[in-house]
Length: 107
Image (cartoon, rainbow, N blue to C red; front, side, top):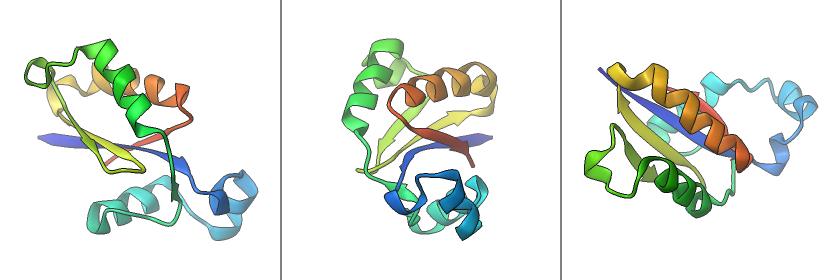
């Protein structure tokens, strides 16, 4: 089975807990809509290229030798990975993402 990890930065309209509570948005709402449409209003601009460089530094630049595929969606990114590496990979990728102010949610 293959999974996806969505990494994104909050849009200004959602960038505080009180704003998110008022709009009643949850991570699952964001990933569900992203899976269907490729976007969600809560997804704001982020420096995905810098995040990509950090991922390449951690895992190597040869995409054929890594256990995942990096997808750049402009203002967010997804990582596609097999179930067999999920426990080791998701935490590492999410930790790198946090250095760039990115949230992580799988779907």
